Each structure stands twice: as C-alpha cells, then as structure tokens.
Amino acid sequence: MVVNSPAWKGIFQTVIHAYREKQVIHPEPNADSSTFESVIRRNRFLMGTAAMTVDRYYLLANMTNAERQNINKSPNWQLVTAPTSPSAPNETETVSVHDMFAIHVQSKQIGAAWELVKFINGESTAKALGAGGGSSLLLTRVEHNPKEVNGRSVEAFHRLQPSMKDWTAVHKNTPIGFPGTFSGILHTEIEAVLERGKSVEEGLAAIQEQSQLALDALK
Image (cartoon, rainbow, N blue to C red; front, side):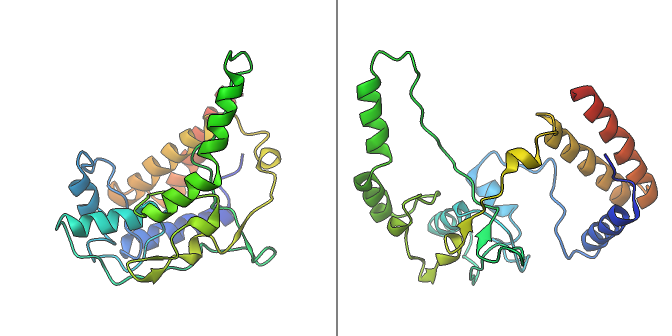
C-alpha cells in the first residue's frame, strides 16, 4: 500500500489545517456518551457551535427528542444530499441497509419464518411505521417515509439512487479487519501531529510503516 506520497501529503496537510483552524471539529476520543443528554451536548451542530454536519437520519430524531426533553433548542437546519460523483450525479454511495432477515436452511418452521419475514418487510408494516413517525431509520419502501420533519423536507435522504458499484470487487484484496485498524492508525497519527508536535512527514511515514505491517499480518 502507498500512503507516504505527495498526493497523500496534500490530503493530510488539508485535514490538519482544517482541524487547526477549527473548520472541522476534531472528535473527542474519550467523550462521555453514557446518557442521551451527554450525546446531545457533545454534538457541536446540535448545540449551535458548528455550522454544518454530515450525519444519518437518526440525527433528526435525536434533535426532536432533545428539544422535547428541554436539553437544547434545535438549530435552524436544512438538508442537502451527500456529495455525488460527476460521473453518476443521481447515485450515492452513502446508503446502507440496517437490518437483513434470513431463515436458517435447517429450520423446522421455514413456512412460518417466511410469513414473518414477509410481514416485517410488507406494505402494512411499512405503512404503520411511517404513519407513527419519530423513527430513527428510513424505510426501504420510500413512499411511506415522512415527507417532512419539523416542517422541513427530508427528501434529500432518498432523492438519490443507491450506487450500483460492486464494492466486493473494489475491496476484494482488502483483508477483513484492516479498515478498522487503518482508521485507528490514522487517528493516532493525526492526534500526534495536532497535539504532540510530530511533523506531517513523520506522521505519514509512521502511517505507511504501521499500516503495511498491519496489512501483511492480516493476509
């Protein structure tokens, strides 16, 4: 793998500059998240000290619940879609499926299990969940999702089509477990540059060395 390169150095410098100038909020690694209130209070956007955030649909439910519990007053917000590629402007790679149901091949109740799966994914269940509102997840049956939350359109969450890119082909040579390891190495080295005086060049060299060792160990 290649990280210690001019292209990656430019990206690394951009990220470090954004953190230092407070253009992007550096996440607090040991922040308290033991209660709903603590989760809300460490969210800079919800507390009105960050102008923008990138988040999932559940943030809207958190925002509504925080206001109901008098933790804070919701900011004045609007939605846009996640950034798209010029080559596929109507597609997004940010869609993910939360739950998938399967039936064990050796189940003695395959018929009953199949009826349950059909019910969970059926029209009547989607209609009931959509009518109830307040869910932290969007439904795959888009027509039953709320059109608005607190008077604001949430169409941006389902305006784009899911990307048809074959991610199994993209990541076929990436060992299971490596993305999480790589993310941890990045976080540690960015922290070292920001807080402990390590240079960008030293940080990139450390990322290159540690990531290659981790990749080799997982192969």
